[in-house]
Image (cartoon, rainbow, N blue to C red; front, side):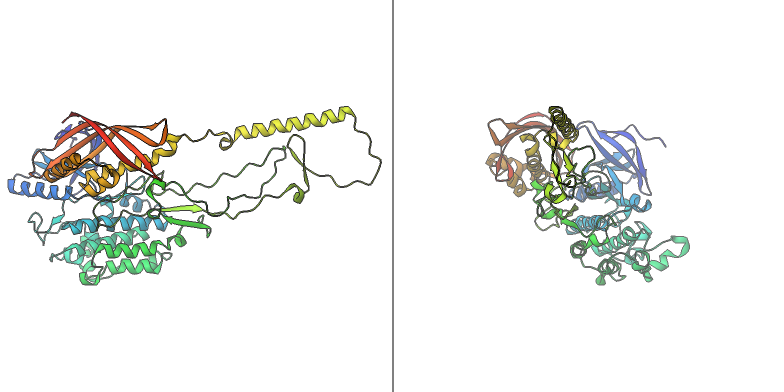
Length: 552
């Protein structure tokens, strides 16, 4: 079946996935000029009451604002098929990673698992049980951030949309109570997280097979193979965590995912021991959450700068410092992007601390010419001192010989200058003020944007301490009337104050999308805004804003 050209107001670019529930398309939001993912439920629904419940529950799922949960932008109906529009994640699923048996450090796998725990715990506190936690429903973007997908079959507590007793979800990851049609709660998701964790660390399913080979009988009554038999290098503490999550009786599992996440974080502190062989005992692992956000790319020097013993080139050129080995990427792709600040709420688990690995080298002072028996020529070149000769009458040096020695020294100096020109770090221009301060400025703007989109006035005020009272009141009115609120920044331009390095200006176009509490049509307002920022100590904060409306 060919993909439709449009679904609602969204342009369809191509199909990017399909499953038992329906098809997923890559789309484009023409109003905000951004890519989106559109999931269309396969079955046509003609019962208006069922449609009403679907949209009611879709709005409830869309109200979940957490860095590890996919953002839902809109929902609707296309030719009697319900659909949901959500953010497009440029990355890969855990199913892709497991299928390819990707060689990943244990620290990365632990990071993905504790992010899954953080996102689902937040949903559980809102009364939503996912019911279909599996590797295919967990995406990892190119910076190592996890997004939990597909709350489409989620059960909202108190809702009749999906009745207890309906066999919905993926068999290999179902809890025993869900498979047996018994009442379930958030602890059913904990069992599924245990199954996902077992498979991620071992690349083997905890419960293999399907309906034809007795899975319905084995999963509720039999334990999976011991994890150390299939993944012998993992810490025993991790196996204990996973097997506790896989207990058949809900009361024997972790009672919430915050507890399981805390246990995973404790194991994570010892994760470098299971890292690949190129990470040796000189590796220092720093939890990203322990570094202030505005300095996340800067590390304090651990002792004196490394000075490896130089090997003198034979062409009388100065020693060239070895290129340091690159730090491992944070996630499955390239790059080590910053993890957004968690603003889901004061009681919510924070976003996952990514593990950054930094090589430490022991300082070795370079040998002095006296220690190596070397001498320096007039041009700066270094050579070995000849062995002492017997005392004789030394002939007078002719002017020609002296001139020759000077020419050789000059040639060595030219070689030195040429070598310096070939080494970028010796000739690189100084970093501009804008390049130095841009990360801190962008971090301040991102804190403001995330607080705004999460309708969290405290987070907004933290990024904008001088928030005017009239703007605060306008935000309160907007937040009260919107079930879901989305803020995006586009065409961002940063300019430093030429007279003061502690002041900057950010001009951008912002788009504010509101899904009304009443369930009506979404509205979008675009504005041209100019923010003034000031640096206090090492932190940038917003000091003022002027805006003009572009349209709705």
